[in-house]
Length: 131
Image (cartoon, rainbow, N blue to C red; front, side, top):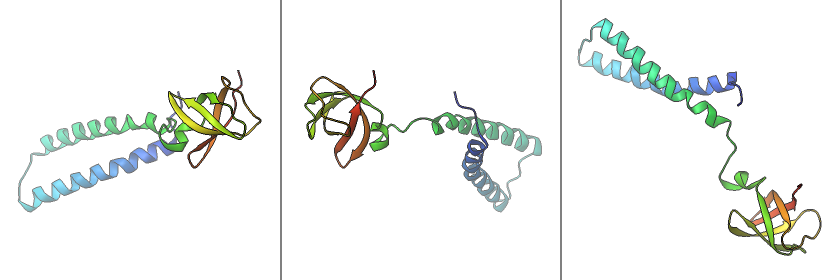
């Protein structure tokens, strides 16, 4: 598990700023309509809501360290199997899907295990997977 960094806390702080803006807006509305809230109730409510918002945002930190799982970034590093020989361009099977692929190393035969190293348009660039 990765450690929490100062950058993570700065992201959380920025995420909390919109909550602080909403709180200021609520306070301005209360002031505008001359609604008074007893100080102890306001403090307890603010502490409870602040804690709830902080804990909710703290849950976001682990997601900042996760590998991208969508788009081309999510495909890089995945393993596949050659379905049609990769002479210049062939077909591989990745997660049950067939993709046009091009070998960055040398030609590969059917059944060989490959790893996606890049994407060029809709063609995957693959290399032989180290066993």
